[in-house]
Length: 297
Length: 278
Figure (cartoon, rainbow over the protein chains, first blue to last red):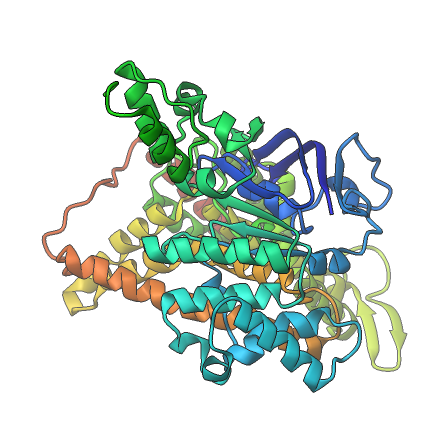
């Protein structure tokens, strides 16, 4: 499923003194099979944008009867999100959304019933017990938890990293085509971060065709994403692969954004007269540096 | 959404009313409520309404916004009014015509009943609008400051005034945070297919559990964290604490006070010597 947004704008609390424009004429296309990154400062509109993707936030024309469409385009696969008659439930089944600190949404008595929550909600008719069990078992296993051990545990007995995995399992249990994650690695230690990213790659290979992550962490984005959209003050500034994006070091710094460690290193070397051309993943940088040899340094 | 709830929310504009001392505004509201209940005739109530309208205009708050505050109590007020119209009875005459206007079985519509209902509705509306004007024009923080300052005399009888004010300001401070949190959790559960705004009452109550439990947990977690943070800063209550914002009366407050005094004096005079007695 392809995501297309054109001229998308959104204002919180429209028509009150608290009105705040969060999205301003955003146009963006995310192809099927991408590992797409969305970056920007706090309040740049990145979370507002991704909340549109499964209809948690809506365009005015999809909310009010008879409201004229205003040139805004927002489609996810075959779903037209500017249309009031769109089946938003079916959409949400296809677009899984993992919020920031998803462990805060756990509520059930056992990990099993928490993960089963989404599956039962989206089922067309009441699913058979065997079906539910199979789906939950698959979801819990794919996120790297031991199904037999955790299924009857309370989600609150799990460790921090395990809780996050369980919460992600609760979203992917319906096998959504698109998985959207808001800061999936926030608050984890470096190892935990790497594990979550590895999990996302694994999911993309097997369960979800497209992955969209919102992130503050530039290293994460440089290492993992196929393309990156940079949001600033509600507008999209760039949509580029990381290898090209992080060449624009000065522009990113001017937007108040950080750059990955690899880009910092390349920049520092450049200031000392050593040019390195890499795609800003750590592995590639090391390879290029080794290829340079010792004589130039 | 939840953010649209306009229940007594602070309305941020600069105005004469906004800049008044919160203590005076609280006293003004109390005095105003007394005046509303002392008003025994339509003229007196009309004066109260005029004063309120004047205050709203001074506060530069859109009338529609203020009137929305009434929406919450509208049903209650109309219901009470209806009961009074149909059951009050009485045979006083206020305008030309029979005292008893309409009768059917136990229902009796009389002139006195209508008058009483009109009075009741006006009084309750003025009460609600007046109170919401206070919260529209005063930030929660200065409101608690004002209450703390007004309750100071109770310290003499060892009443924990400062602690009470602290509890109030923490509670007020956390309302928007918990609202945000609720919205976030609701969104997260909606994304997992929870239908929070459809279905019958029983289904809706059941649907609230996945929102309520995470919300409670996070409220407890926040309370713990806040307690630790206060402890870490050696917070120990009201003694010898200084204030960042000191409350001071100014000429504006004197003006407002004069208006209140005039209003109450006028209403009291009308209470003793009615112009058009009911």
